[in-house]
Image 1 (cartoon, rainbow, N blue to C red):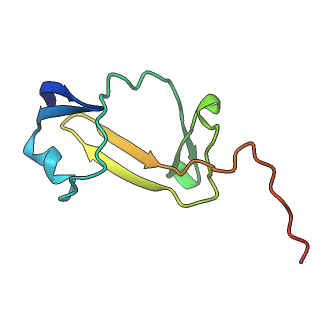
Image 2 (cartoon, helix red, strand yellow):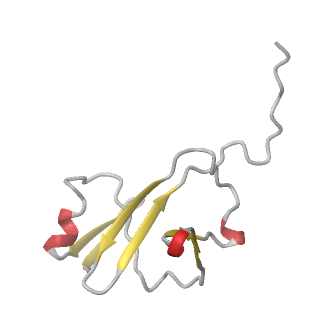
Length: 109
C-alpha cells in the first residue's frame, strides 16, 4: 500500500510524488505509462460474487446494473490481481461500447 507524499499543479496536470511498498511497485512489471491511482476506501458500492459448478468452484464477479452502461462485453476483458498483506484486489479492464446509442447501418451485400 502506498501514500501520496506531495502534489502540485502544473498546467492541466497534477504532479504527484508517492511512496509505495517495493512489492507494489514490482506488480507494475516495469510499466510507467498509463498508470491509474485508486484508493480501496473509494470502492463503496456493494456487489456480489456468484458461485457455479461442482462444489461452487467457479466464481463470477457481478457488475451492478447501473454500472453496466456503455460496456462492450462482447470484446475481450483483461484482469489483474493486486495482492496486499490482507486483501486481494481485482481490477478488470473492459472496453466501452463506442457505438452506444448509435443505430448501426446494415450492409445489404
